[in-house]
Image 1 (tube, rainbow, N blue to C red):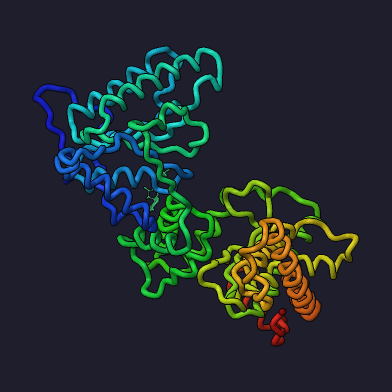
Image 2 (image 1 turned 45 degrees about the vertical axis):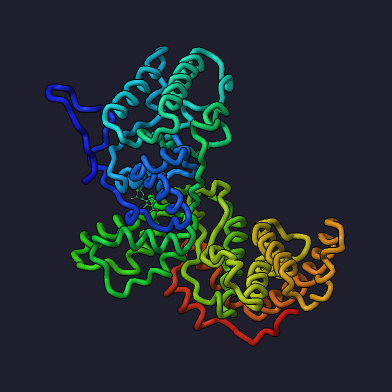
Length: 468
Ligand code: ADP
């Protein structure tokens, strides 16, 4: 299946046709609801007559919004692949030319080809390159872009509602798109493609593992945990890097460790480990170490995968990250006790800073964690999980402000109790904390096995009482 070009003899082949685009929905993982929306588009192609007879309007344009590498191109290809129609693609940055009229004529040529080979999906990547709100930048470049944009609008209007050619465009900047583009009959459907959740990451990894020599016992949960913040393209890359390493070492199977190694490389790849002062390294290391030291006390969090001073990709402020931090607060599945423990862990860096440097010398490395704790504490109260739940039955008769005040007051009580608990843990684990901090400063990252060894040697675990 795939491309179905009917080509007259002697005519030159279409320039924008993507002939190896036989992608199917099963190749796109972790998108749940979104996939269903796109299945509807496939349906329009397949049962066009039915929709037209009913007088339904078939969308002419669909806008996929999301960060690079989240699978927008892949999805567009899958729509064409599933519907069995041709796929034409271009990146809008190729439209943008210095010479007035060149961009516009490319747009015309693209749609001409699509029309001759309809039904078809036209995919326009980086739509914002041409669809930026008019008048945002001046000069002759602006004039050229206006001409290209106008041509694009004309082409979109030409196919409106007929289901022969559907345009799918991708952008990471819906906010700057010209409003003419998102009017009814043009890109009137917006679909947001988020970064994958842990479940999504695991699914994506499995899709890309399909044709690779995976060991039987690969721990996808652990890898899913270790890849927080990564998008599909990065996850696909992990598999490739791991496969290369296996080849290079003359081994036959890709293991969990190969993938975890690739994951920490991927993180490091984007990062400048700028020279920092000894004090700053120390503060950063202490911050991460405190999280890890606290985490080993609690069943939901004790499996520490990686403690690292290497910031994750996409984070420019050079902050420090560890695996504990990536155990995202999963509101739907975490128990009441789990939330308390999470809050306690997130407060541990502050407790450590206070213990070692004293109140006056505390700094702000732990602010993010503190905010996490506060957010979860408020959520906890808001959901009625707090002991003082009778108060919350009265929510309905309070003003917004009064309610906020009450929630905040109770959340503060919980934060305080958890902070006491964090302080105890830190005070009882000073040796562990110091060893971990020193090793982190030297090594910049400590993996699961090494961490386990340290924990067995130094961790002092008591049954800390529930905090409230
Ligand atoms: P975008 O267009 O959003 O920048 P792409 O569709 O080009 O992203 O993704 C690049 C590659 O990353 C794909 O070809 C695929 O190998 C992988 N990928 C991205 N998202 C997914 C996903 N949801 N499922 C499977 N693979 C994915």
